Amino acid sequence: MVMGVETCAVCTQPANQRCGACHVTYYCSRDHQRTDWKAHRQQCKPLCFKVCEDAVLGRHLVATRDILMGEVVLKESPLVAGPAQITVPVCLGCYSILTAESAQPCTACGWPMCSSNCESSSAHAPECYFTATRHGSKVSVSNFGMSHPLYQCVTVLRLLHQRSHKPAAWGKLAALESHCQQRRRTPRYEDDRVAIAQFARRFFKLDEFSEEDILRACGTIQVNGHEVPLTEPAHIAVYDTASLLEHNCRPNCSKSFTATGGLIVRAAMPIERGQHLSICYSDALWGTASRRHHLAETKFFWCTCERCADPTECGTFFSALHCTCTRSCEGFLLPEEPLKEGAALEAAGWWSCTSCGGRLSPSDVQVIVDGVGRRLVNMQKGDPASCERFVAQCEGELHPNHYYLTDVRLALAQLYGQDHVDALRGTPEPELRGKARLCRDVLSLVERLAPAEGRVRGVLQFELHATLAEMARRAAGRGELDHVELSNSLLESKHLLTEAVFLLEYEPDSLPEGQVVIQAKRNLQEIDNLLQSIHDTIGDSPM
Image (tube, rainbow, N blue to C red; front, side, top):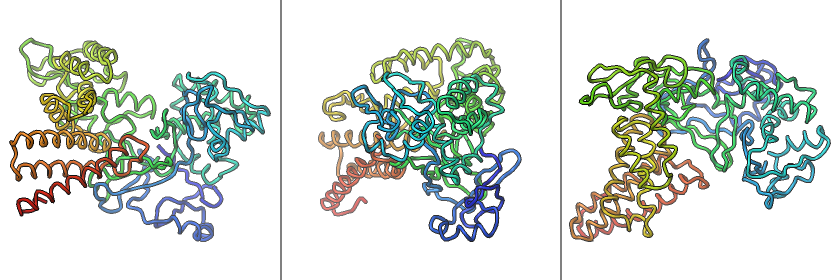
């Protein structure tokens, strides 16, 4: 993800000496390191990783000691952030969606904003500067509620603005990989050349930047950008050290975001000294063919990680299909060449059955998967009955753990109980048991396949806790549980809540997962009170 050219934190010239403590900041000479030490010492902390480099990976992060699961590995603010390339008009201060009624033009440049506070924010300064001083007149945005072409260049302008206004940040951005050579072979490169590079040079009179400079900025954002879900729609941010994290489809690190858009990287599992640090650049809950194709299209490499190389995907059969070679066969079809490069499912070559040895061509596999995919697209979202029908229709074609079924079961596990006035208290008993079963099944699958998916795991644990608590309440009300059985049930709920808080503790309050943490902490206190009450009654602490 990153080229091997570092820049000095003082003069931004090429540098090959780095701080021996944090392994992050570089200098061109000892003199400049001494000059910067007074300022740098405030943020210099010995890290649990170091930056290494080789010919294949380029720069990457390697653990310098054993790292505990859940330990924070890295925290950093973005080098640059801005709206997504394709977006409806949003406020360029807070990224909230604008309407004709809510938008108010910036007094200096005309870009629509939501308030005077956002108008004066530092985030808006770059495009305001280029518009007011270079374009020479205010922009006018009058169409709301649909994607607007003018926004395609905003984040690129913010990156280019760093060269003259924040040279240290510019040096770090310039060192990031842009994959311009690979991008030249894609339709998006030509689109960016016309819609962003040529337009921005002409409209904002960017004579100091060549077309290639601007296209390199486009590539830097595409290759290194993180989608930040704090706003609706999500915006894009590029970070420095986090860009050195390798990709892995079963990574050992997970990421969260602070309320202000900072990035927090945590160890998703115990990491031994010498291991490389990784995150997933794609969606870990997609099948192998989809993940690899997405990475090739957006990050310009074909993943060959252990999960991608394993047709069973860690023994979960996450992409497997029911065998159709013979009517009586109960086996499953798996790809014979999961690491073959090319179009999504066709790249996997022929698929063979684990039981009868029969084979299915890539085109036949594509027909099955496309058919199920169309049903998923046409399924009524947010409706438990529609989800149940989809599962019933597709379980004969897909492995029970298939990513399409898992996607719907994950939604169903959260939907049960939402359509009742009293939530779980009004949920029929069979539906409640079904919710508990779904939570356990999907949770077990995700923990095995993608343990770094902390948000998914944390929410499922909270949902399971709530379900078990309601089932225990009903059983106790019917006199079916004695004090010991009730306390054991409460202890299981407490364990689930504790795990949910552990996984979601860095999620900001603005996200649903952050609200789950707040409620989980309240519920933990209630459970502790109940356990204490039981202890006072039976005289033997269950805790």
